[in-house]
Length: 302
Image (cartoon, rainbow, N blue to C red; front, side, top):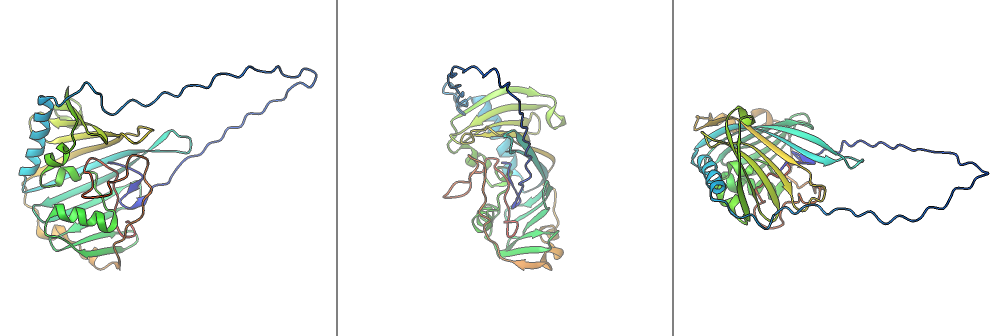
């Protein structure tokens, strides 16, 4: 989820602080030799998967209910606020945030408008073409697209490393993508805080990522997800808040294209060769793992 690449723009804002302390040593009293101290042991990070956990039925039921609610929607609109940690020069993580307003109509229309800690970006798919637009630079990349949202997400990733951290939410079968390789799932309890409603908290994990998820107890809609990736030694946290849900609400056809984007200067879709933190690299083959990974985008963005 959630990352150093925010819609194709690398956020390399890091802070470096160096403090140098100097001291004088008296010349008539040479310092005493110190005994070498044993090397400090660096504790190993805890494993992502605890061996004594299994797939708890209650957690699986909640996960399936959320995925079924999303899969059944013919159209949807929602807001995703994604925050991700990235190490500073001190090692202590900094946090970056993006906000995306998403609208889709199954099976072949999608719009993503993103702002945040970096240039804004827009993505449109109308069933025939996909467009990645950077308003500030007035640049757009346009390409023919496959006939479904799922296939277009894959095509955008293959062509320009465009990846949306909320992909799990909008694919045709969310549970299939999450369940693949699932090693553990357990129920945590209820929260009265997240999303302004009562939510059920669950956790689930595979060999790559550990996710905590908050799901509306009544409406079964996901409200927040937090993830830690196994191959990230710093255990950086990635969080996605989902709000403003509107399911099966009609969306005008013109919402999935942009006259302004169409009149911008055209450039080609191209991969940005991103340099991501350890553990966050998308898989080499097949459709990108749809867990909550850092967002990448297109063209110059990509």
